[in-house]
Length: 285
Image (cartoon, rainbow, N blue to C red):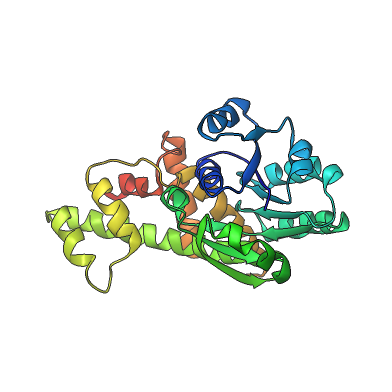
């Protein structure tokens, strides 16, 4: 299937590389043209579109990977004039369910299909084609493109109508906040107890408290290394979306609210572009 991608950031670039290696990618567009040119240098015969509409004219499937609700709305506005019946748009960004429902309505009005398909797995998952993808929208449209999506995602699950993918991603981000809080706090406690942190990670990770974050971020935290990964500023943005969604249904999220405050401190002190494991900076003795 002729596939194009819009957005070549930390997630979009490796996604594009995997699509190219599998023979699906024909076109790309990025707001910063130099990044698109870098991709083209790695991908033979890849066309760099002059704008999103030009990309839409070449592609049956369009993947979007941008940072925020406003970015997605701008991209959709640029795509709409060039959409044709049968085109399928898959947005892998993390945005609000309300935004998804709005843009999906616009896309469907043009005879095309829109799937909200946020992903989990971080930069490592994107590079290794091992992402988890949670999809909202038309199930039939998903089945048409599943083979292509399997090039970038290890697990693809249809969650329900438009917005369901983003609601599921919100669940993921809330859990990630809680795990980050628990792991960083526990390792700070271990350090205060003057325990050897490498041995703590080794033994705890093999028991009931073991988890991906401890295994993959614990050793780097011990070395005071916080290369992303998943940036503090981006998780802060996602958790703010989660809080708004919870407020809409009259629900409180105490762990999310605490994590937002902690992330704001990190951002204010210049650590917003570090991995979320930088929370350890605030907790260690």
